[in-house]
Length: 68
Image 1: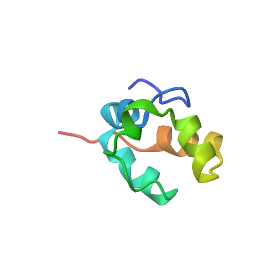
Image 2: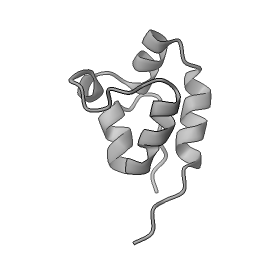
Image 3: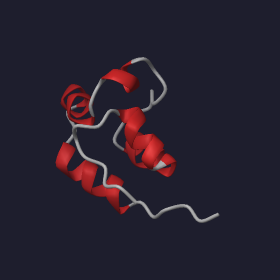
């Protein structure tokens, strides 16, 4: 699996790892399908929400891949 990085948009991260939605929501990012999700990078969204982006990206990359 390709690694998620802070320069990716929320949508790109979810495309790589749909189950990453749980991590994003755990950080208070509940509007995963809003227009900002297609344009805002994880870093930009993290700044708006006061999130430690490096920790969020670490957790996003730790989500196990879904089998089947």
